[in-house]
Length: 431
Ligand SMILES: O=C(O)[C@H]1O[C@H](OP(=O)(O)OP(=O)(O)OC[C@H]2O[C@@H](n3ccc(=O)[nH]c3=O)[C@H](O)[C@@H]2O)[C@H](O)[C@@H](O)[C@H]1O
Image 1 (cartoon, rainbow, N blue to C red):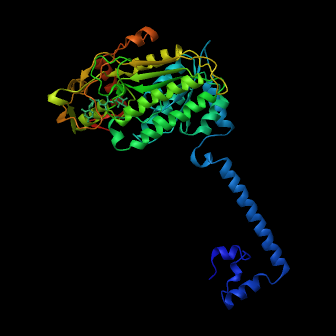
Image 2 (image 1 turned 135 degrees about the horizontal axis):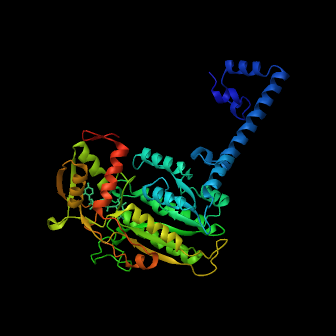
Image 3 (image 1 turned 45 degrees about the vertical axis):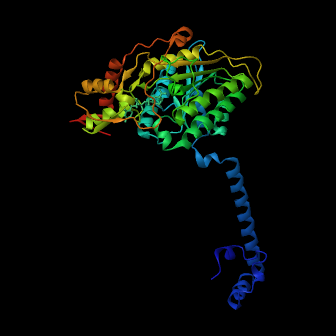
């Protein structure tokens, strides 16, 4: 039997030099017995070549069609409408990670006061994407459009800056989570370093350049023992790859500020929690386990010392983010060239009152009215740090940042949201 290739390309040079025997020759002779058959074959080959070439150029010029669902007149219209500013001296902000925890809250706050907001999010499955879709629906209902795409997609970013002259970028897309970095180290490099550079390249090239405010992390303080943590403290002893990529982000943004005149503000968030939060964080999955009657594992530090975090409520973080955007100052570059010095700032956004993990569990038990099944173990060497504590005086001075929600109040709001969102059925959360 002739191969498919032989059937379609009977005149391929070389093919017919091979003597395939009598049967083959008979078929060949039958095929080309008349001129009209040959003509039809020629037409067929021309059509095949033409469609192959046009397919190739389609693939080359539009590989995005195979990887993402963006583009088109309707799509651009939605972006323009979402970016529209509805207050005087308002801004148009590109929010990366807009379907994420902090991203969705910041987007809503900006939109509420009349700023233009366009979101971008890749809706990855690091945690339940249905929660991200729910946040997206909420944002859509307030007139915020979220582009489904990746910050590593330079063509998409260029297109967005083509459509809208964003005045600001609120960069919150990242691979979060301290302990997951041991499982999937490359996802941290991909998002927190590769994605950041791709985004900064787009920002530096944009004309006008936007001011960039982005999420660093309290984890950059790593093994620093001087408390409370101040922005001028050592940050060269990260305890996890997550922390290392955030620290790298601070250095990378510095170079873009230095070379291209991008206005940069890095925000070191301290364990942010609240409604619509991240299910990979302890307060969130402790709640789920307590309601489901499952045990929770509480890590304990050296010499049986409790671990503590400067838990910071989402609304306080949002105020810090918005104030950072408002005070960011302008980028000075254009056409990829620096025209003068631009601001480079780093702020702690914490709560300034660390609470131990066992206390966090007590508060949850009280709000949930269910007793936790505790399993206390020594802190594994998984990237955790024993405590965090923010000095926020710089943010207070420069941004007017003043957190107002303590853990007791914040967790009460979280639990209320959790029970409304997931439901509560005799100790079983419905997921
Ligand atoms: O501020 C940040 O920059 C980071 O904050 C957050 O990290 P963390 O402060 O580590 O929060 P989270 O995981 O909720 O653990 C809280 C506490 O529970 C303890 N913990 C945790 C898990 C467990 O099973 N048991 C336990 O005791 C654990 O040892 C810890 O003491 C963000 O996730 C991270 O993305 C980053 O933004």
